[in-house]
Image (cartoon, rainbow, N blue to C red; front, side, top):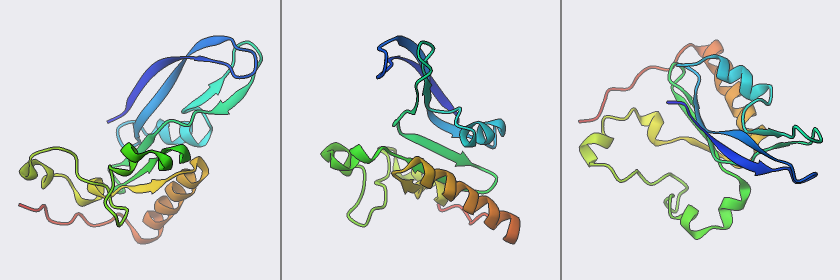
Length: 148
């Protein structure tokens, strides 16, 4: 599912406040144009209407490709220093499952439970390209049987 909301942000250069779309997640299977928009810097980018200052917004962003069966999750590097953020993961770096009934969690495909975590926006783009090229080379990943 694609999730986007609006925030008022003041330009760090000129101080002009404006409303900006902040994307929490993009599903490129449901809206394939979002992949192009991400690679062209149209997602989570601040562009000031006053002075033309431009900057990437360091907001968490999940990229979901249902066809190729992978998820990559970007977090800003500053999150690493936050105890609350660290509590979202096990000691081995795997995400802790969300607070859902175990039976419901078992219905999630395994790739949804193990997103690839990155802390650099370029690393996100590089990983997406890597996974897309793997699919082009090997074909679409097989769907593992659902756990019950």
